[in-house]
Length: 375
Picture 1 (cartoon, one colour):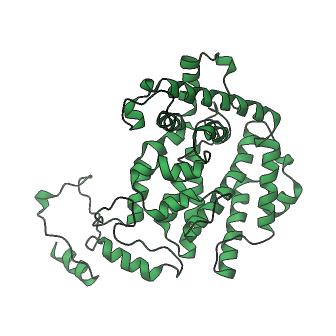
Picture 2 (tube, one colour):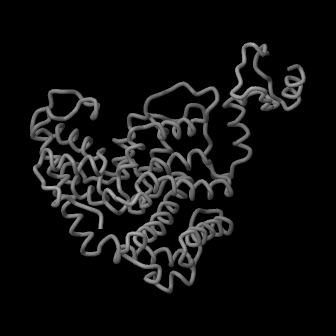
Picture 3 (cartoon, one colour):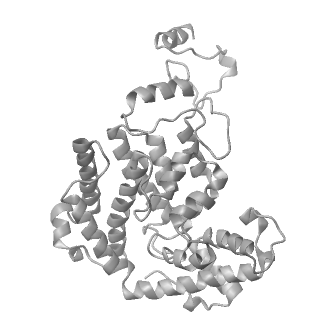
């Protein structure tokens, strides 16, 4: 123990109080998992990061800037706390039951919103690490970026928009409503709110990296899922795309990531070099034409709008049927009120695909064969 303490002091760390072996329990008998230094406090880690991060990277400081003030954590960076809160949240876990493209897919290998978020985080943190950006902030934004999505895909935004002043945008709703109870840092919420390219640019380079990573991930894996579902074949990919990034998903993601790294290396700013940037736009346009907006998909989207708007209307007219525990809102909402509509949207938008489909049958009288399905 004295040797351990001396080594810890040599490395510039003050170990905690010395404990006798009788007060320490090990997972495995005879385990000698040697660390060799004391625990790093948050302030020490912040100082080390400040020296190591790129000049434009976002620095974690104290408890972070939050809507409701908090005391700093003794060990975790403020963005690490955000990351932990996202991972433990109901909203994030429910993404496992929300489709990426194919509604309530029977094939377990097709992406969900959760697996999409994980893939976006993998791409984004890979970029952040080698460019000196703040990795925990990048990962927190990436994992949380789609928490505002409703069930059954992007058609949910069309369904909910009539009930939300200014319309329903999953990015804005996710940051301002869905994730609000987590009291996340302003930079994390900004990255979620502005990850969509139709929104203003994020205020941090980490948020901009997530915006690119989201597009890289969904363009590549939505094509991969369409091939798996039998809608397309690898040969359907335009030759102009394949010639630059290949036909294999891992090659495509790698090529686009390398183009982002090349742009940052050349200019010091987040972007994507040509010809990859133009190819990504071509690839995305192809996906819209052949996957998202094909006639069969549009027919299912119309059913989604009818189902979800029907569920919202049901709960607006009968707010007493809204479970208080699920909404976190007070009881006694007036039927037909704006407040009832806000709570109904909050509740229905949080549903998984299968739960919403089940309520369509139970509450609205839809026949199972009429329900939206993945095609």
